[in-house]
Amino acid sequence: MRDKNIGFIGLGNVGSKIAYNILQNKNYCLYVFDLNKKTSKKLVSEGAILCNSIEELIYNVTVFITCLPSPSSVKNVLLNSISFLNKNHLWIEMSTTDEEEMKMLSNLILKKKAAVLEAPITGGQHTAESGNISILVAGSKKTFKRAFPILSCVGHQILHCGKIGNASTLKVVTNYLASINLLAIGEALMVCKKYGLDLRTAYNGIKISSGNSFVHETESQVILNGSYDVGFTMDLVCKDVGLFNKLTNKFKIPAQISNLMVKIFKKGQKKLGKRSLSTSIVKLLEEDCGESLRSKNFPSVLVDINKKKKGIEV
Image 1 (cartoon, rainbow, N blue to C red):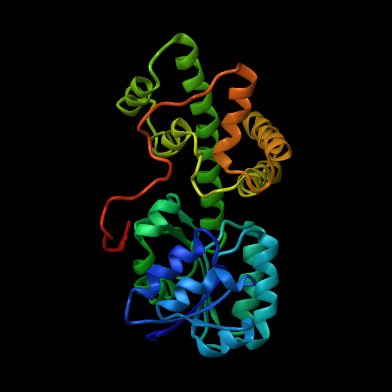
Image 2: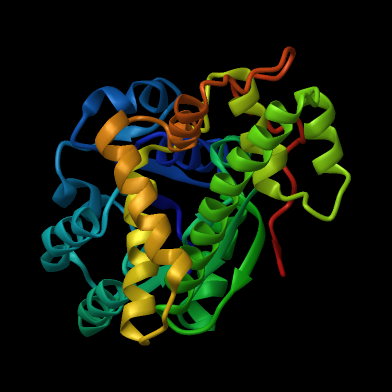
């Protein structure tokens, strides 16, 4: 079926940017809902329709997307939506969530004869804004094909991962790897600082080396600037590394690095606050070493300078 009316629930840092990219496609009419109505002002000013309840949103759309901060938030929204669903509805879940919860909730959807996809995004707030973020998708291939035009508004590289649970697991794995990289980058830059290396030279040297990574090319810049602003907060990184650790426990994997990383980020959350930026974990190292990892002419925020690329299946 061809979907025209799309609903979006959860207009936080990333969700608002995803919703905006859907709104730019004139093939769709966008309905939005968030507990904090202030987050919808820009979208409504550009043509989105604000709903006063989840029920109102579900009633007006055939596809509804959630992008929420925690598995409990996702569960709460879904359980409040389920009685309003019919066979024409498609739920697309774009948060980073628990794979067991996702499978349980998807079964509730399927019992209503509705359709479901999990489609967590990866690539940072700046690529969410440009519409070039990557999307990991799981669910039936038929439903994937139905949703692909919508997903193409949101992202560039789109991977079908198989059955429900696969995409959530893969997203948690990628966030775990990114978080490890963030901690390692802090220590690497501190060694360079203590040695007396110019930090721009260090940044460029890492960038052209086998030690380079997406995290280095992006998050290192806002660390060196001192803003630490990646639009991702400490409570979210703690959630993500916790979900990975849960998987290691589930499969009885003796994951020493995972256990250590959970402790490090929990310490960061306790000292810096839940809503502190995830990259500010490096501040703890700076304080312990009595050093500041600053260098001139690095950006305070990340911007994807690329134009919107066409959505492709990879």
